[in-house]
Length: 266
Ligand SMILES: [Zn+2]
Image 1: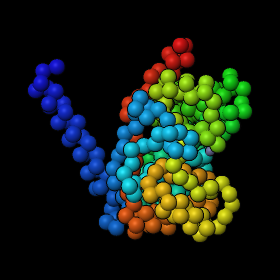
Image 2: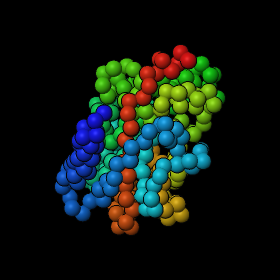
Image 3: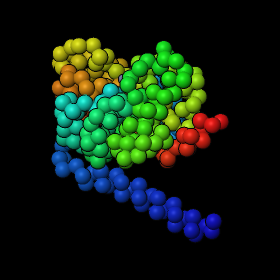
Image 4: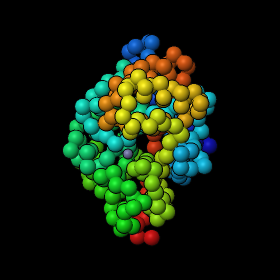
């Protein structure tokens, strides 16, 4: 490629990146909002598996940078509150969705994407894949991906438009890990969480989450959007992030993954 053309293309990419951050800032009407500080592109080739709960590697986050992730949705009663809280603070998150729920609430899945959030995958029915027969474990993953893609784009494909996956209960098998890596799908663990699957009052949930964050100082935060206690404490938690100079990083995929059927044939 001629040098001039290459420089022009590089400049065009830089301009489009600048435009993205300017657009994000412009979209936020409230000056006082927490906001999304930057966009981090996650490529499965560089980051095949992230999150210290399960893996030695995590995302390259600076001190006081956090990534907000929500598992087990979509769930209309609580997602209304969660999405409102995120919109109020102009914050973008990543939702790891259950395929079956996505097939039942496609409008909510579309709304998550339309509001700028990243829509990722969390199996079809939230089975523990470690204790699922190998042939069924792969199907759980693929059926889940297809259901979310169908909700988003009306196409039932096992090639995810966002190649991000999280195992239910963080329970994985080597065979499925290998398959996901071959397909260019990044596997997400988490760096910190506040056990919001245990029933507790929203105030207790908030206190516990803040304690965990104070200890970790940064990282991928795992929350569950169908939990009423989490939806209830989220506005206060986002305020806490703002008041304590934490910065929210939004994850986006690098590119479309390899064709799933091609990877399966290998
Ligand atoms: Zn889950």
